[in-house]
Image (cartoon, rainbow, N blue to C red; front, side, top):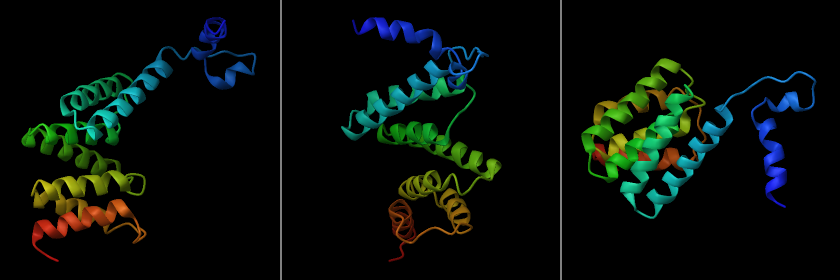
Length: 168
């Protein structure tokens, strides 16, 4: 009984949502399914990372990254997931490379306001890894923004940065 409505809904999922209420139907392909699967992998990465099963977290971060490349939208969050998993697996140089790629992407996009959370995450990770050059780049971007002083992610990131440079 539950399967019938699911099967009836499949043709609609291949179309644009707006076309369900209009006469015109646009084929959307598998894009929606790939996006949902990518988001599922993101959630699984988060779960396994938080229970400290880092090999599984890395596996799902890689799957998330692969799918994001297929749909042509490599999100910065996906890169930070990959870098954090590599860092937890002691692949420090690979993690730094992934984080540096994310920072270069932010630099070229120039959407600093939208990327604030990722910038804070990158600042924290670069500071934790004692990569002062990349951390300083993150600081320069964050200083261009008007961020609320109560922003927890920013406070943690700046705290780790100040610990790295020996300032209290």
